[in-house]
Image (cartoon, rainbow, N blue to C red; front, side):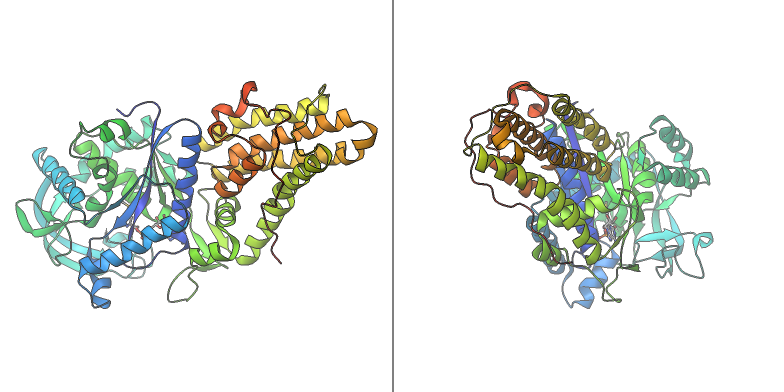
Length: 509
Ligand code: ME8
């Protein structure tokens, strides 16, 4: 059992058949926001990402590139690592399935499944899609191709099978007993329908190519790439050494975040493998939606692939994070366009959040000799804004506990809106001559509200939030959520502030 304050979040491990694009960046950024929030909230976090390097798809891509698979995967995996760095991802580990620690763990899981009589030798005769790395039943094909649109080929070869069919009832029971296992709920229903429709034993080894982890004691077979890949979530914690501190602390994972395309592997096969091996399934699989580009599927052949590095270069890292995480409810599909991104950045970041911070900090600079003002008595309006600020934390916690990233941001930006309305209504600039004590109070209330906003936005807008907190002279050790509501952590009147500088640029529409 993992410890109570531990929190383990994972991205899928990405295929190294091709370089990373916006879809991969999206999942990783979402997990990064989830991990950052959990850390801010005092959890002991482990955040894993990595690359999936075996299988026919990668072997073919290496052949097309005219390279040996290992050399090819070394190069492409490096691109994913570099992207994570460029996005300032706070992962604790980056796993590659060609690493010795992983191979040993996968073989150990295989042996455990054999020991428990969960694997037997037979012959596979059926359809396979290399693009999806997936077996399909005849009945699943649509006009001769996979339901995903991927081409399929007929495969007939000796193969080991996993007794998936015997796990139908236990899986249905498991979904029933763990209603939060699959999110969003609509996806949960899809999975349950699929499992309730009946499960066939799953082919878990291949003999027609070599690029994979050999089956223990039968090296003619390589282990099916999905059994290999899924196990990364445990091998990165030291599996099969289940007594290892990391494994004991962080397994079962709190959430595997995946795209909806690979939900079945994570929500059906993975818990079945784990239950069959006597191990605890993850607590949750969250399946997010799919991005299109101006209404079209993103694909190399259409030439409309969005390079995340280009977006970051053009608009900034925080801006890219914000747009992707705010624009669509996490779980829904989204359509990307630069126009929508610019609009969203200008409206929410430059006009609303940025302007609030800029107005308040420059008023303090000009009218309070650059020091945090001393409040006098609070009015009802002041208490309302401060109270809304205080209450926001619980709401954001609740949304984040369900990985509702856009709803968390929506709640945060409601407070930005309320603070802007309060500035307009109180007009502190007009109070300088008439009622300086009231002006000081209003500016203090605003500064305190901005402090709380910036504490929360750290998970989503790390760079900008750090700059805002710097400009409010919030000490580095007072930036966790423990300091959110505590009276002792409130801004200290009289503290000198640096001169304010703008945080969010405006882009031409
Ligand atoms: O499936 N919109 O790797 P993969 C949103 N190796 N997300 C997208 C996307 C898009 N248009 N395109 C890709 C694999 N993604 C396996 C995973 S895990 C044990 C093994 C994201 O390189 C999304 O998270 O094909 C999707 O699930 C993942 O990239 C697929 O990455």
